[in-house]
Length: 302
Image 1 (tube, rainbow, N blue to C red):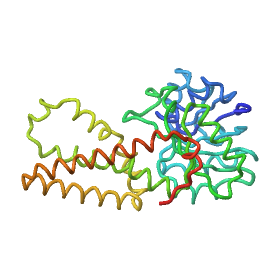
Image 2: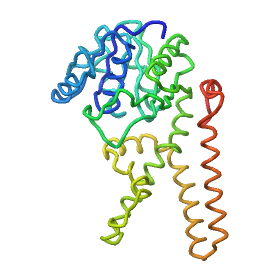
Image 3: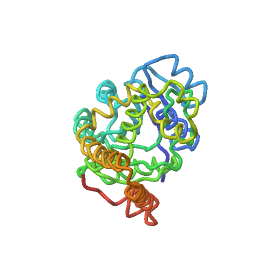
């Protein structure tokens, strides 16, 4: 960055918000980092760990004098928090977020801002099944992809500053429009969580002793099924339009595999699994694209 932000306000000091605040403070991205949350106990814990310079329970107090505000609450709470903070936002301030669904935020949040304040959406693809500032890490975003979702009317300088902020935290920045983000993240993140939840729910029908023979494959597959229920229920419902199609396609593929297994068709099952691996390899090749600039410039299509 050409210059650090003078004051960064992070509204929501959970795992992700706390990690962003800590990373910004540790890397000198902001001269002062202010944290805001709903519970005084969590704020005291965040301050004690050195995640922030100071804290406030009041969003308006937290953003006063801030030139960058990061909304790190659950998606459903962002509008209310921003409404509370908006009267104290100064002209020239930038607002971004960490929401997993972008279209609804792109429609709602800009209209809550006072004149001269710009919102540019963001989504760092980082997190854990754990929650709370006690699990925050200053390297959580380091090496992760962060999707920035500017609107066509957003000032290029504002977009550049938001992208530079995430890059300064160590993220690999890519750019999408909001609809493309929701479509792609449905496949890459939201549907995998839904499938893990469905499998974990189905375990209620498994033999009681099955857990005794579980190995690393079981633990790897089910880790994300331990994610916060309230948070993920909100995400899945908020992105329901983008999720419905991929879930249907996965159901079709699972039905194909079920039929092949039931028929005892080893060759068909072998071919099916080989094609599955090829699809995964193709996505991996895109993920490690040798031209990150091309990925950054891509706007995408839903």
